[in-house]
Length: 508
Image (cartoon, rainbow, N blue to C red; front, side, top):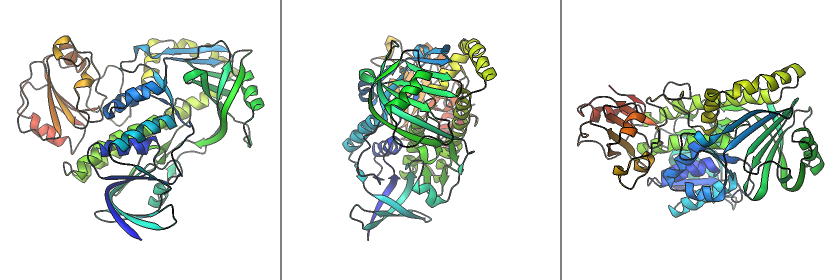
């Protein structure tokens, strides 16, 4: 039995684990990433990268590669018994990416894997973690090699990104919380023969039936068919079965022209009782499972990784105390709770059977969903740009600027140089301290993990509600860590130092 040491061992090489590995590797942290699978995933599985995830991937420099591989879906349509109850357009979303990028999970993984390899870290496939033991200053993990032998990995930290049946979670003995609300789906990649636009999302509801059509490049669709029969269907998903669902939940005359792949999956929406235990943290499906409705699961895991990544790197480098890692669970657990609760509520609404309830859905829902504040809130939630760490609710209302909220992007005027938007000025691995308006220069004793940027742009000052100037510290994951209206820098240095102990720090 061999023994090796690393700063961080990541178990699981899906999009979440790969995002985490990239976040650590680009900060120079020694990282190993293992996966029990025989090789990279080649199935589409999850589909759709939200605006907030694209903003964060921009920090890794891979968003343009993802955009080249995906389809930009800007319109979201929902029908109830063939009557449209919602048409929502992402065009007005306050993000550089006002759309849902329809790209298969396996292609996201390909881009992340290639980027990770360029950073000098490679995924170790057919390597399975079988046991772990926590110690005061490290974790010992027993891993099984492809040849059947075993090694002991001595890691300062372990991150479990190994999915819904997480071996890491089982080793920790953590419970998966949630009621027994099982959802069963048939999924398929296929071509539709119909007259609807090929770049818009459609969901059709019909008295307990639900079929969602997610557009993809080259005329393909991923469809998800909710199957609430008991017992749930088993065996291969056939053309005839899918066509019956289309006949019930699609415009009259719609036909399936071609099927590329099809399968079944079932899900119980759940969340782990604790995101971390000692030197081990859980991210992605290992920590929370969501319905296919809303395409939130993969994106939530990716954003777990961005939240934990910079914090873990700061601790490994000795810039922050281990207590900083407590903020990962404190910030992400409310987001997971909110998403599980919200997707469960939406799923129940889509599967209404009662004639009175479905009539109410057809007649009342269109009036409510057509209201601008409702559509804005819906699109902000779907795109996940409303995620916030301000008050434990998991989300921020439109128009609020507070510590813990997502830092808004702003188009810059010509005098800001070659940068065209505020996001271009932010450091991709460190905190960025914005000095806005007439605020005095920052103190010279700021730590190395802070980059200072002076922004003399009234639009930026207005966006951060600091018309007379002030200071805004933006974290590496794009959230406001500190905001102060003080006109002088005397206290800024001390306040900024405290952010690595309390990542959301109120200014004065």
